[in-house]
Image 1 (spheres, rainbow, N blue to C red):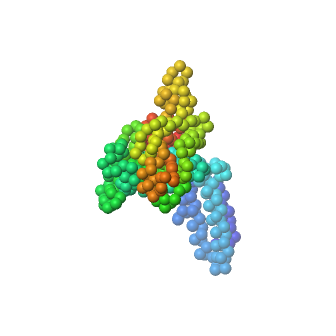
Image 2: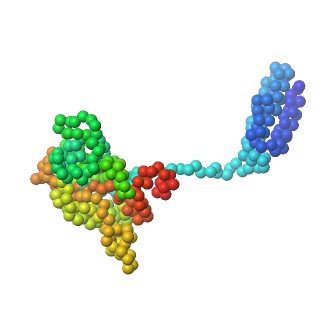
Image 3: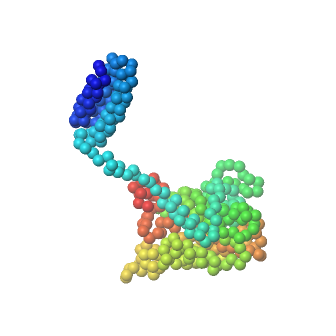
Length: 344
Ligand code: DAH
């Protein structure tokens, strides 16, 4: 064989490949497979003189990439027809943050903008932080309100047993300690909580966010202003907050907090009918109050100089009241059902 003969063999093979309409994978095998036409041709260079072999190698290399391009076109078109390779591919299915992560990010941003600092404290914590420092001595009946999971583990001589945090209020005295009992404090603590409960409106693991503000001269108006601010930012401009007298061991006075219903605008009526979405115009979301002097003392703060307010609510409940959502069973949020989660 001569270089000239090789050149014409290459041309011939190229034409055959171009007009060959066999499906892509098979065609690839025929031309570039181990025993394919290209390799058969390449073997022939052994007949050439060493000088010609070098030239032949270059020709074959070039031809190989030409062949690859030809085959790539036919691969795309299986049947051999021309395919526009510049058409964008199919978009991959892109995920997004879990709805609760989205809600947490939004809640953090709302409070950070008015000077709160986002913190997190342990989810397995000592009895002292979860109950006792919050004005609930051992055996106090108020503890029964929290369906507590106790942890088999060491008992601390001063801090007591280990429990799974039943609420984010464990962050109150921890935050006072972090700041060495030196207000001002503006904390927003968002974390997982755990209780022995499970039904359409409760899951054993859920999230709460806890606000704590301590400084000189803090009063109920600051609490109410903060609640109104949150209501407007989270639910929309028309939303109002309402506080009703209640009892918690760690606040005095204590309140339950409601937000006005977006369906009936707080009136409790839709046309002639009762609003079915809320309790006479309002949704109950959580608790709040002025920090009890004993709690300030437990955190090393002098209650004769400083006052504070606190509030704590469930993230799932607060989020599920948003107007475009209609979540009847919050257990779905943790069900891993992609068809459900994709909606948010
Ligand atoms: N920790 C309470 C609960 O889980 C909620 C709460 C009520 C938090 C009043 C507070 C508060 O900070 O002041 O039920």
